[in-house]
Length: 237
Image (tube, rainbow, N blue to C red; front, side, top):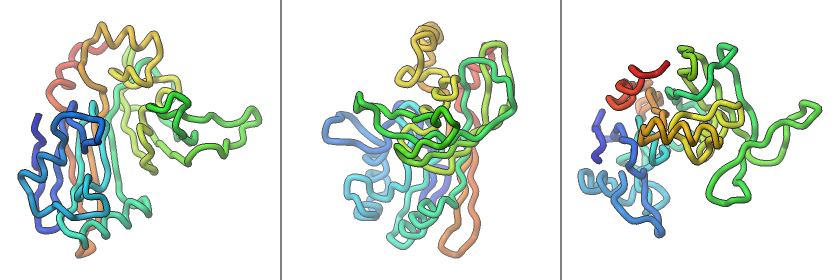
């Protein structure tokens, strides 16, 4: 699995990460990661950032998701992008296919997110019975709009205001519509459906990314759906 290079300049590179490729490695994980590939192609990125294990990495995508990532090539660019991510001014738009036909046309999900008792996954915390926000966990905001309704699925455009671990996956499950292909956060019923579908990934793609470069100019990048998801969409009912 190899990333696709979308943009290369002196400040940063923009890439399209394929599903199945880790953004960065960890001591307990074997195999190549996106960082390994980037350092081989762009050795100047080594040492950029605050973590030597994640040079230039500004944000990440789950292993079985795909889409656009920006990677800093200099410390000036890293700090510039870091400040934008911190201020939540970076625009991130995703496409997701979820199980079930939604009734409405979109909504904002604000359930806080914390690490679950199982340790290896996250959990959304619903509001209290009185409708008041639950202060336990970390603030998380996900906006979504319905793009197309099918009999058994709904295609969504999703934007996140925060960048919590597995945020979109956790929030869509808490909303009652797990993402297609997601066994970790799916229900027993959707896991059975996933085995029948055999998609081999989760139907979640980071389609658009917008930020400001060092010159103060707005930069926007966009990609289409990968071929395997386009083929799957032909069979969706």
